[in-house]
Amino acid sequence: MRLLIAGIGLIGRRHLEHALSMPQIDVVGVVDPQLRQEHVPHYSSIEAVTVEADAILIATPSHLHADHAEAAAARGWHMLIEKPVAHSLDAADRIIAAAETAGVQTLVGHHRRHHSAVAALKAILAEGIIGTPVLASMIWAMKKPDPYFDVAWRAGPDGSPVLINLVHEVDLLRYLFGDVISVSGTGSNAQRNAARVESGAAVLGFEGGMAASIAFADTSASPFGFEAGTGENPNIGATGEDYLRICGTKGAVSFPSLTVWSGAQDWSQAPKRARHDWAANVPLISQLEHLADVCSGKAPPKISAVEARKTLETTLAIEAAVGVTCLA
Image 1 (cartoon, rainbow, N blue to C red):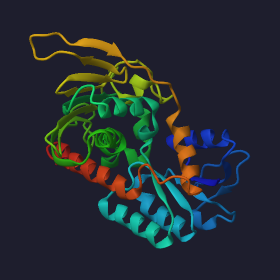
Image 2 (image 1 turned 180 degrees about the vertical axis):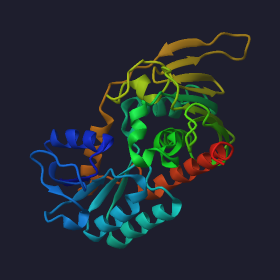
Image 3 (image 1 turned 135 degrees about the vertical axis):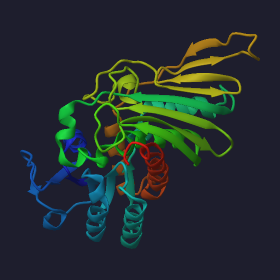
């Protein structure tokens, strides 16, 4: 697969390092208005690209995704677009329309769908070990360093952890439990007093009656979060702590330890505990392997722009619910 990578920021650099190490991928260039990379052809814009390519990985700021996706579709390139798929539903619709018109595939970078621990959790739920899920409780609480917000677009509302981080949690819950039908929440900016929400909680209602809560903060040095629990992000310290608990009619499971509680008939009995193993993988690499399969026609996208739009819709609803009181 001949691959271009657009946007060499925190996540774009990680994608580039992985792609350069994979024999099935030929990185034919990077697209960035400023940052150059050694030994890789550099282009300042998509329009300036002169090499042949099969696909492009778009890791630019989300408000630019629609413009860049339209330009890529016009070139006939398949796309891996970093999450969120776009900054608005209208922009997501532009991406979907451009891809359909050009006949190219879209894959969106909700890479947790490629994580082996997530696959193991989904299998536990599918097997009915904990019965029918009725509720889930999640905490994502990390402390972002002050220099993180020195980047201009992160300094204001676009630096909210909802669209940057919670979009991952929303997509994980949707992947496990289906479509969201209701959203409520509350938020605060009491620590940094910036023009963005920084902590809060959201409650999601799912088809079938299940409910899930997400408590979040980018101001807390806690051990709880997907990245900390799984150790999948080298920029975030690993703790191995569970951050998600799912309760069902026959038991419960915590993640990422995959500790399963089952065997109790009611509250008079103590459930028994068992651990389920999962083999570690690098989900960003698995995602790139999947992109190669999508480009060659061997597989449909695990999450297309159409599917990612649903995650974006719920995430934007959370942003509205948690940001009303603190961003007035």
